[in-house]
Length: 418
Ligand code: ADP
Ligand code: ASP
Ligand code: MG
Image (cartoon, rainbow, N blue to C red; front, top):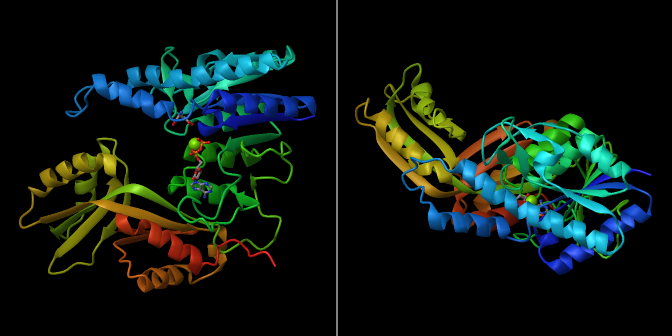
């Protein structure tokens, strides 16, 4: 008998029919003698619909008001609906269940509304519920501040709820049920030939998530990487309810001593690039440009500074597209302090990344990337590397072509049946 945390994403609870199907899956795990704790997302695209509703009453064009507290009250309602419907569906098939909201299980967070971080989870109510023979159905994505205000954990935050619950309860496995049957070498929506991985390391999945792979929220992977909770990504649409050996296991290391060179390829769509030319080459220039940007809580991603030319440099960086206007305004203001600067910007760029722990021991990955992109006539605008990843910035309309050519260059396609 094991303690299993199961998380069901939006598509998996997208309709009453789906919720009933999930109830049967939970019943199967219970019938096998396991203790099950469930965390759910909001039904289908209901979070997007709630955001659209808010836009009808609140325009943040001037960015003078902060409605993030109210947004959290609004957005957290989506998970409340699915948690209660799933609990009722379970009761209907004879399984005792109890829906629980974030504050009821003391999912304590900081007060950063819309992207709060979990500080702690109280396990008392969960343990009590399990002891009563009930399945706790925890509303994902939400928490509560020390003041008692509702918070949400950022888009895709139910993944983090599930992993944090699994860590707090010291669960045997955290199962993430979604609309694909595991983690693939790249998003199968872009490359239909993508191959499902049997396993992947925490480190690789953390890198893939932070570089855009939406299948697991980055913060969920940060938790998992710290606590080493075994995570299995599975399809909730699979009629086979057994989990052993299915899906993709996110784990500490590969069984196989030889890690693959490249585990996967990922991308972030909403990038933007700002370039300032002819800045004087002097100490503190990067600080002068980037300080006012970080003061607005804007995260800068890739940074490139050219070699000095007649005492001048060019400085380029990227930010998420939603922060483009603010960052550009800030750069325009700062550059007024210097003569003859020239600003170029582009809000139609994307970042492609190739990730794999095998890169540590193999040279030449970057060359393969550059060759593959060159052969397709894809221009690289910026490059950044770390021990286990190489990222390139390219035009947004070349995204699909770029993903597919890199997938091919590293021979990641499905192995052909012989
Ligand atoms: P959920 O609603 O269950 O949380 P998400 O939409 O957040 O599901 O994540 C699942 C989606 O992630 C898949 O439908 C798939 O298109 C996308 N995805 C992106 N990268 C990958 C990858 N490497 N492997 C599998 N799916 C991926
Ligand atoms: N419902 C939230 C979202 O759409 C949280 C989640 O699905 O994980 O982002
Ligand atoms: Mg998700």
